[in-house]
Amino acid sequence: MITLLPALQDPTGPAASQEAVRFGERSLTYAQLAATSRSLATRLAGAGRVAVWATPTPETVVAVVAALLAGVPAVPLNPKTGERELTHIIADSAPSAVLAGPAEELPPALADLERLDVVPDGEAADPALHGPALHGTTPGSHGPTLHEPDPESPALIVYTSGTTGPPKGAVLPRRAIAASLDALEDAWRWTGDDVLVHALPLFHVHGLILGVLGPLRRGGSVRHLGRFSTEGVARELSDGGTMLFGVPTMYHRLAEALDDRPSSGGLAAALSGARLLVSGSAALPVHDHERIAAATGRRVIERYGMTETLMNTGVRADGEPRPGTVGPPLSGVELRLVEEDGSVLEDPAAIGEIQVRGPNLFSGYLNRPDATAAAHTPDGWFRTGDVATRDPDGYVRIVGRKGTDLIKSGGYKIGAGEIENALLDHPGVREAAVTGEPDPDLGERIVAWVVPSDPGSPPAERELADHVAAQLAPHKRPRTVRYLDALPRNDLGKIMKRSLRA
Image (cartoon, rainbow, N blue to C red; front, side, top):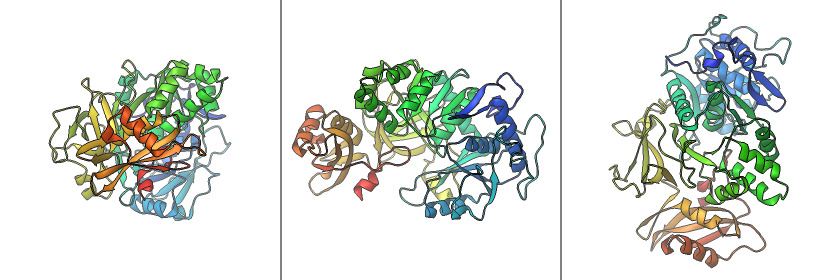
């Protein structure tokens, strides 16, 4: 059996008085989090699934932890999701109730669900969650321990972004969560002494599993900024924070602040004092790597994962933080690169699709056995859809998504990422994205989408093409440059290239 959150199983243990989570001025110790979540867990016992209105608040943490303690699968909901998509997720996952803070106004798509208000222990004289059991369930035990579910039982159902259709619910078993977090413990020397700082959304793997369940599994602390700001990062890292998790957009803003403020010594000192600076969810441009390293003397490390696989690779705390790479496979993860025909690549420097296998994988897509089967090879490897190369020492270099970031032009396979990094090295480029478009001669031509540093005087198309050709190779130069005020991004800061193409 797997005890997913051991520090919460003994509410009177040595960690009881330690701060578990903090959101601004609001915080919960391990004893408070255990008491509140266990009380709510008794109400949830026997429920099929529950939805969680996943705002960046203590209420979300209590709700998810309670569901995990009760052995009830939780479906985190993005509060910014539109009505149509939210209606699909609710119909597909069929939760018996929605858990939310009492002050939250829920949309009409959730109107037919039973609502359970979550009030963290110590914040109300008569917490609303100390009520009767959820309709149709059997109250659980109020004893000192709760039954630990089977490792293969679903813990979370996280919906992926629907690029080719409605979002699919990835069923994440307890086994996968424990395996990924333990692999990161090994890679990053993650301990109960670590204090994690981040401002990531709590409806996604990065912010919820790594950013909340990660510290709680280790017996450490998490400080959530609520809303990202460079001032918040500097404040929390200067006040005992040891680790920072972020996405490239956040690190770009940190790099900008370090560049733009002559008096940014406080931020630089805070970043340099952190034990680990970790970026994920998308590639961090090499330009931002170098700007942060120059100002702080510290290198940002990257890791690679997906909703369906959790974490696959990561630069180790004692490894070389090499810009442009996401490190070697984590402990327990098998990784291979394959050709389009499914044959395994023998040349690690060649570009191929990443396939992975290991205890970190999801159980399948909810209600979609066809999609689950299509995502796996007959021998159990998961087809990630991401393409990469490998350095001789095993470090993985992500090229991008097979459908959007691998460009086949003039007989060459070209990764969009290296062209984007080359463009960002040009002083006239603030942001850049690269896609391919059909071309009658080349098959696909390289298109650069550029946000200029000075909108009134953008660099010329020929200048940018020559810049890329000089840094990389002539066949990798953009054939078309399109100028934008901003690149379309999702909640995690990923560039939505399908929107560019549309």
